[in-house]
Image 1 (cartoon, protein in one colour):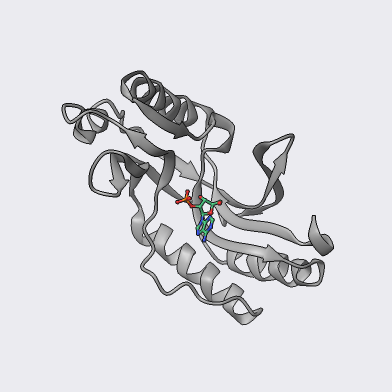
Image 2 (tube, rainbow, N blue to C red):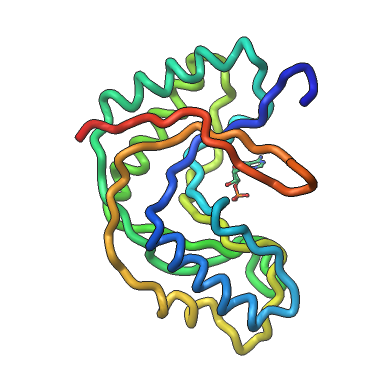
Length: 188
Ligand code: 2AM
């Protein structure tokens, strides 16, 4: 931990049933994949904003800014939509699960977080926001295994998003682990 810096991001986490569903898809994919690095179940999440390296002095203002966003944003519902990829062909750079449902609220929340963090000195992300849950990286599938086949096994139950979380990314004993530092409850 150089100079007490922390590697942070803001994310939405999922109920256990959704995590199990995502893990089920990963397992089917893993069984068919020649190669792939799959995200462990406990690390599955939807990123709202990646902050990168943050110093101790910046931590307080970040938490305050996120509280200001949360206290005026209503809770909303989303559901898993489909399986897609960044990178057009095998090996797929990233395979992800997408969401639909109340996307305007999700997008609004993400924009407000970016704006609020911009005010406390974080560079605004200029690339368009592509909400995704990374399932695996560098996944090698044969031509026959189209991603559409995995989309078809997604159940479409909605689940509520009642909070978001500030997380720290660390390597512990050679493993990537995420620690939740702060939960921010949305307005119910
Ligand atoms: P990804 O899942 O598409 O890799 C923690 O690293 C989270 O922040 C991941 O969900 C990751 O997205 C996201 N993230 C966004 N920008 C990032 C960057 N420049 N470096 C690492 N992670 C980033």
